[in-house]
Length: 477
Figure 1 (tube, rainbow, N blue to C red):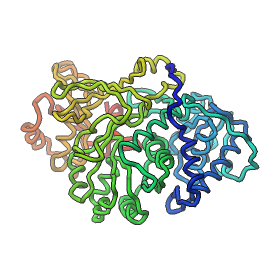
Figure 2 (cartoon, rainbow, N blue to C red):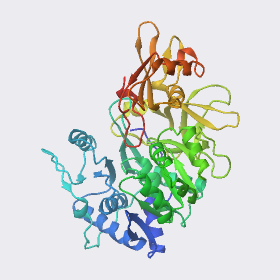
Figure 3 (cartoon, one colour):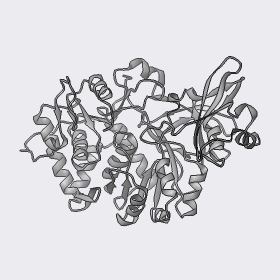
Figure 4 (tube, helix red, strand yellow):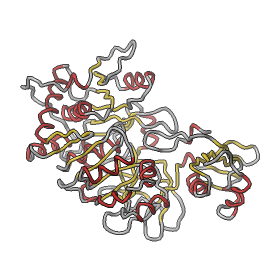
């Protein structure tokens, strides 16, 4: 892994939780599908987990692979692992056995927490319930340092095999500080979230941050648009974090105006369309779009106060340095630095060196800035299509095609062409039995330059997306 400078300037996230829970033990703090624990109960039960891990021989730095289920016991385990100084390695509950065993072997896990027994696996397995029983106590907690790993989160692998991104305690704590400042997060806030917990969006940005700011969080194990909108009012939520897929499903609900009861509605993890932004704005909720990645946590946000500009991710968050093109200068790869930038990929020094140099992270995302300095994400540099010598950005073409009648969803990729180098191909989900390709082409002719118009349209039933709604174009090529 890349060398990192010890960083003790940030209060550790586990300490933040403990101080908050101790100071307001009777305050409702964590709710999952309507079942709530007070801050005092959280402090006690996560201490049980920490002690039970120690009784099983788990020490600071050991990797604990955790099946990231949105259940009370599972969440208590995640919090207890972080408090213990062990390294939490979240995995998707729907992960295949092969994917699971690969992660376990990659991180040399000392313990697996989940309900699945894997044939031939030698790593000890415990259920979340096993670790949530009352402990005898008396175990002295191990001191955790800011540059100690807190999490290893495996990337989605959109350009190759997944890699474990190492996030330190200082990374996580600095993210919380930045969001507190940028979004005005206070102990009076209650966050509503149905995001999966195996990703930084649901785990760090939502769960860890809500508990560290002294506020409360209401989690839903399954997202349902009607129930989620009802919970905004019924759970007295002040904030909610979503992905565009969730927002799209809510936009068609007659109760959409419930979103206006929130003081802050945030979208991320995938691009948000201008049309969807407008639908919520018309209902009284102006979405705040932000940008981040596993390797850096969140780095950009539209302003809390001031214009939240559709189609942009705003400006760097507090503490973030960014190399950006000047307004009007066209596109360039975004490079960022700051206390949230990860320590490197687990046991992948060559992969780390490709993206991390002297603390600066090459994101692989192409950006441009408008005249007011708002940053726009144009697409991935590795997904850029060069057709006939011209640059074609898939997201630009997708936005235009998706706005046409009869098109439900679209993904644009480049495929090899002996004549053009690459040709633009669009995979489309249509609202009807067939696609009138000639009509679609005639409409696009006035909206896109000729070299950007797809040379082929392929009708499919669905497009491959990950659990956060992010399009996986590499699976279509």
